[in-house]
Structures are given as C-alpha cells and as structure tokens.
Image 1 (cartoon, rainbow, N blue to C red):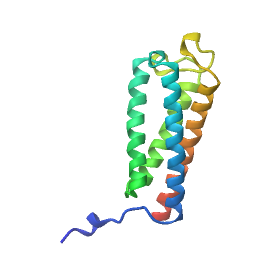
Image 2 (cartoon, rainbow, N blue to C red):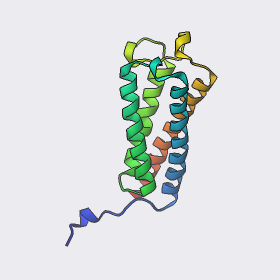
Image 3 (tube, rainbow, N blue to C red):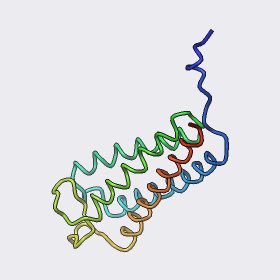
Length: 146
C-alpha cells in the first residue's frame, strides 16, 4: 500500500486553478511573442550570457506550462517561481540602462545593431505583465489548496 503523502491529489480543479490555466495561456502567448522578437532581432544581438539565461528561462517556462495544464500538484509553485523571477529578470535585462555588461540587453538607448523597435518594447512589457499575472495566479491557487 502506498504511503498517504505519495497519493497527494493533483491540483487541477476549482476556480483558482481555472484562473491559473487562463493566466498560463496568456503567459505562453507572451513567451512566444517575446521569443519571436528575439528571432526578428537576430540571436547575434544578445550576449552569450543572455542567450544561456534566456534558454534556461524558456525551458523552465515550458515546464511550468506543462505542469499547469497537467494539473500537477507542483504547478502553482512553479507558476509563482517562474512568474516573479522572470518578471524581475526581464525588467533587469531590458528596461534598465546598459550598466550590467553581458547581463544586459537594454532597450534604453540601444545601438542600431540591437534592432530594438516598438514591437520589442511591446513584447518585453507584455511578457513582464504576463509573468506577474501567472505569478499572482499561482499564489492564489496555492492559497486555495493550502
């Protein structure tokens, strides 16, 4: 017979989890929009440090999306972590001046070679807002199941 802790039910029910799924769908669209802007700008416009960090964030984001839509018990916690960490990281990388060398892809007075335009600003801000939305939705879902 399995230990009772091993039989922890999945999270995928209730209104808070429905909100988390909607927030996750928005997050997925924002993730793809931001990624599309990086493809449009060219992958050579960011440092290798930003490329590695962005790839790690993307993999963790896809994992979070999968957890949420599978209704996994870790989904809400993953949403909180990826949401708030990503929001802070994107503000740091894109919306602050280029003070941090390889940790910066600043949209504040970027060189022409960075190919930053209005769509870049939209994509970054859209992702930051979606990050915050999934983070708060994850918090609400965690509280509802606690």
